[in-house]
Image 1 (cartoon, rainbow, N blue to C red):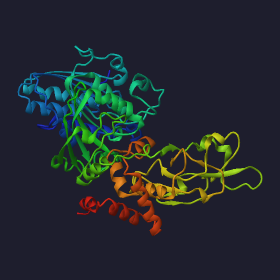
Image 2 (cartoon, one colour; image 1 turned 90 degrees about the horizontal axis):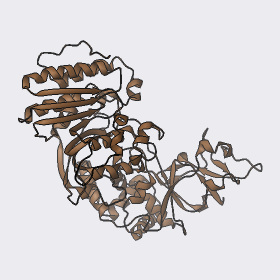
Image 3 (tube, rainbow, N blue to C red; image 1 turned 180 degrees about the vertical axis):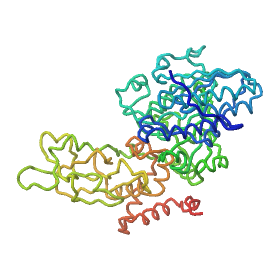
Image 4 (tube, rainbow, N blue to C red; image 1 turned 90 degrees about the vertical axis):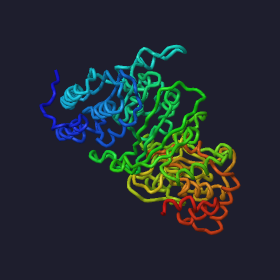
Length: 533
């Protein structure tokens, strides 16, 4: 049986400060690897207090859930807030989940102190600590759905507050199997926590989470977004300008947000969303804010339901410009796909040097061959083969040699630009076929070919500061998915061709000239003036 560690609270210490203190003590007892393996990123007190302050509950009896509670700093902060602002409060039932045996003594120490602290407020308090897996323990919630006249029996909580674990799990993981209705590809555990929490909320209940931004877009989270928005109305999103400041104690480089939502059956009512923004935790109480209509940030009628998250006036203006465009790759008979060559699966057919006369080889293109507006092949680098054998076994992996735009599928965390697009022309090689490695997307016209000015115009747009700014409003990770590019609004094809013609005429492919051409063409110098001030 687990017992609490023996640590005394300071005089008049708040439970949240006590929880933070024991959390720091715990962190000294385990390795960084242990915390990473368990997805543990402890919530700083400033963030915990901010999240707690988002509640608007006024009931006299409340049931609160904190899954993945750590040292229970969020529960403590929430209950402190409720005792101050809810004069009707008479009874609290708190339910917390924590599976890490190493941290449980510290969790118990906080819960014991919280119980003692609450006695002076004459609030009846009961706490239950579960040490089983939160998702597996509540697997039934994915099978049970509400009827027209009733809620599921397991929807019992008034508030769920959480900093869930963040780590990817394989598709065969039991938790992924339980949540298969919202899982595609390799899921991240935090989104499953969010969905289970949603299912466990009463109608009108509050959901308060701090998570990565990655759920806002991409294929992996599409089923999650579809299900989540059927039950949750987002009321507020808080964004952070810094990726390092939010969990600086843990040296985490992660784009995070705080989300406050209300359990509400999907209907025609589209409320507004309050978006607040701070650089990090030091200025979290001095945030900027702006109210948006829901449709300005999320198109709930679309297939993807991508969430745009503007952090400043520049982002606002860029989003409005893109929403004014009606073009798309599909409309222009252009497609985007992922390179079919997976190197480790085709090793026996890959070559670093040209083999004259022994096997028939064609070019293989990968990340090292691509840069903004610049293509280079071959590039001699160890373990970066530049050729692939043309034979019966590889025919299905090869593409016809024609005009393409290559787009990197991944960017480094510290890259200045997420989008790196490279124009490629058929006359670069005499080969009939080429290989494209799967770290590259390729843009092409399936029936016909892309004209030179279309290629250069598309590549310039994708490389521009304008498109990078728009892309960052919804993409919170390093992946550049083909799905997101298919959905991206584009200006009329004639505009794209005119931009390409200007680049051909100037014969200048530098990034500064690309941005100058794009900004002048759409008359948008004023949009980026905000960033320079």
